[in-house]
Image (cartoon, rainbow over all chains, first blue to last red; front, side):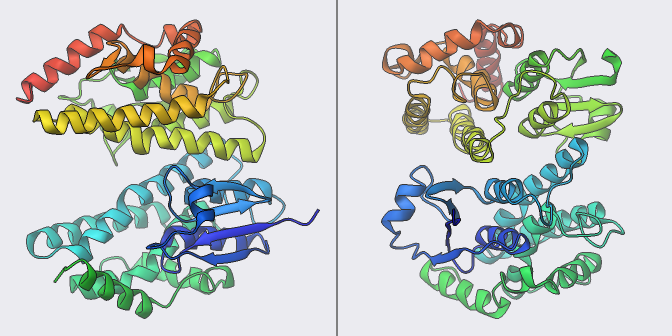
Length: 219
Length: 220
């Protein structure tokens, strides 16, 4: 039976990018559908009635919501290629921990950087760098968080790299001097087609952020 | 060996209760170390330096933090009995989604309710929590457990918090027993399991503790 895989997504969403990367790593053919978040499709509302958010992976008509849950699903269904989670239960728990840390910290703190100014923005920048440094510590000497090849934590984090330029420009700071190892890791990931084809141009993300700032009346 | 499994614990924490239920379901012996969050042990700070929170499971000296992650670890490692997650990937994704909903939505609303300093904010949080509980009532439907025929991941994720809320049966003027009968029956069913009844404390004691905490913070 032909697999029918559809991804409801939005081009600049780091959460959507995670699922794109996972599907690409597994070589899964799918239909990408761009949602207009100001005018959500009936399909999106039907497939994710609880949160009404993207990404939603629809596999043979059945929805999987929440990006990390969708990535684990992709890993478990298409298990014969490019395993994303390790097989050892302890290492799996560690991978889940760091992906969850990324969920708790990176998006919200990053958002504060471009939506605030003054002391609040400074505090957000500081917290952001601290979080990245913790992740650098976890990466250590490994080429990827997953070890010799990209894994779950790499997939969870790399999408945010496409937002770094926007954070840096809005926040007037530079990440690379503070986190050189992490930036080297990001560039390494971008050499993989699964990543480079899933991430948007950071300049476009920045322009999008400027549009949002204007819309929300943020200086 | 019991000394191989240590749980850094807090009696009133629904997150810690999840881990206790999972360990009991698997028949795993462990040592529970009660933490005083106003004076965290050096062990806790060493084992969970990122969040400094409980529960932390320490297995053969290695820590696992975050209750849903701990429960999945327990399920995957001790896979000889009582599977907590289903084997089918779609069913697993479904279970993970609803356990995430409990944390993302319900716990968030409960926290806002705890922090509510005015009657307006209290009423708003109560209203939202009732809607959240209605969603769970709908998701449970006719099934004996959230996972279907067997007790599992979502039940473990939800029963501690709901039980502690359910302890005083009304949310504002909303009677949880009358208005959400499926969840009421589910609570009774869960409490019949030794793993649950032994892992949960008297909800009145929990309620007293929370009230005291609110008073100390000048919220009552």
